[in-house]
Length: 332
Image (cartoon, rainbow, N blue to C red; front, side, top):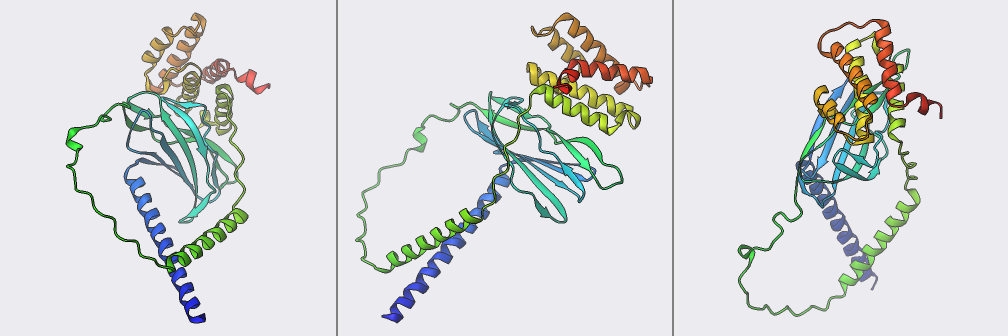
């Protein structure tokens, strides 16, 4: 009797090990499939490597998409989580998850995982996502914006290829008699041992699992613009690269307009953007004139190699701050 019990225990442990090995193999295969079915772009900005991934490569309007931003930084460099509203371009933001950081090849890897739902069909674009980089490697702390590359995906209609086809029909087959069940006692022992192992593993997981990260704070468009302007002030970019300063300053205003009025400003030229504003009912004539003067003066610096004076730079900066309500947000 003791020998039989020992044999049963060995069989139970063997069956559990085989099941775990199959689970690991299936998990590895699933990861490979996800990587092959995702649209991925990589970019580097100094000590920061950004990887933006969107899966699957193509989807229907009713599908949900996994948008993952992987950030790898050198020691002494941090990147704050991206701030999303309820929507991002043509996508509805359904959920957000941030796993714990990990070390990969001497760098710190952080992942920001979003669940998106498309709001229309056709070729849609996931716009570049800006994030704040904090570099503490030198004597002075440096802050500036980094952003991912944009991604495109094809969204099909829900009804596409949904109807049944006679080409998929299979011929009738004769019924097959089921085999006679064998009365075996050892599967019950193996099943019971596997259940005990699973229960023990679940208890260990519940006891040792880390506390969930605090929920992300969703900020208003004015608060996001305030944070971006604060970072631009801290970077002192106007004294380093005046052209890049005007690029970042106009980008802040364009993103603010997109978040508040739905105008897809980042992908339009100044002329196209002003035409869209002119047709928008929410903009007053005075606002359109101030915005036109601001963008056209910035284009002179960005594209015509115009060298502005200090008072011109200060005037452009004050216009941008006033347009996004910088003083109002800063005083609250």
